[in-house]
Amino acid sequence: MPPATKPHDEGEHSFIEKARRAQIVDCAIETIASVGCARASLAQIAERAGISKGVISYHFAGKAELIEQVVVAVYTAAGSFMAPRVEVEPTVAGMLRAYIESNLRFMRSHRTHMLALIDIWANFRPRDGGSSPLAALHQTGLTHLEGLLAYGQEQGAFRRFDARVMALVIRKAIDEVAFQIATQDDFDLDAYAAELVALFDRATRRDD
Image (cartoon, rainbow, N blue to C red):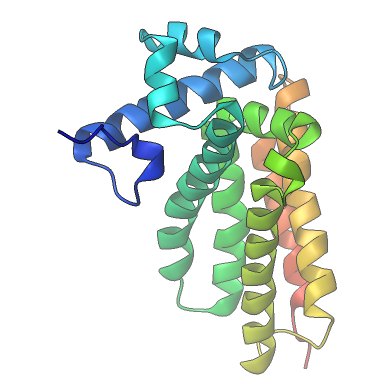
């Protein structure tokens, strides 16, 4: 009988393997949010998951790969939360409003995810000096937002402006919320969201 191949060497995983990987990633998020990326060991993550460290090693090539999958999981969850709320809007202005509001709502309802992501952003170094999955996913999201803004200009709903610059400003305003949620227990996210929506509505609106 040939030796078993580890799941991280395969392109596809069984349902049980996917469920186990998801459990490990969830526990990694909780551990990183609690003790930080640098101090979060595979042993601590395994203990939180109620499994042996060897089980993690069976599913992931190492801590670096696991952290990369944490990043992918957070961004995927955010995208799944936001997309249907944005796509249902009949106008591009409504889509931009929904983009901002749903992103902030995700941050509020996934505070642990945000804490983990902040720490990974500050402390994680990619394997073999490669590009960071966090940076790559962030740039992809930025490109999508830029496309939404450019589409609004093409439709005549938005005024003329540099879509890349506007996308950067919007993302910076949204990303700041993660730090506020992490450090300010009394942060009024609803008020911030309302102000942000009004601000960028004025900033993008075409005045005839």
